Length: 146
Image 1 (cartoon, rainbow, N blue to C red):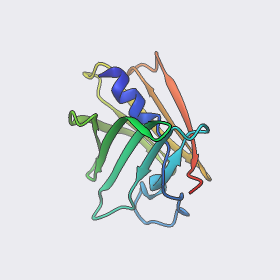
Image 2: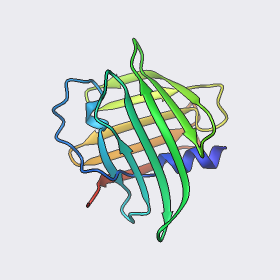
Image 3: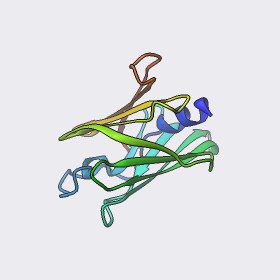
């Protein structure tokens, strides 16, 4: 399960990255993101009634080797729900948020326990780790080329 969720978080998008014009506090995550090799994609919808819907996939050539669906629920604290390989949901609750970043956590989950997304222009980063920041992995994405 650790590897599956970690793999999902590595993907970068498939829709062009939007100009951050949404009034939604997480509108900046919307768009298509991919890693430098183009073999991992993460795509997030525009906000819809407060929700954001996403999917990620690892690619080997034209074959999909892993997929994950995700949903961010609105609320006093946002909730990130991950469905790696169709399993789940695994729920992570917002613990920190800034203008262009958000951190979700669930200390009871095996790995990851902490998920952080941040955006800087046409770049997005995702970081996963244990709750204390150890065993961290970082992923860099750019707006999809297509």
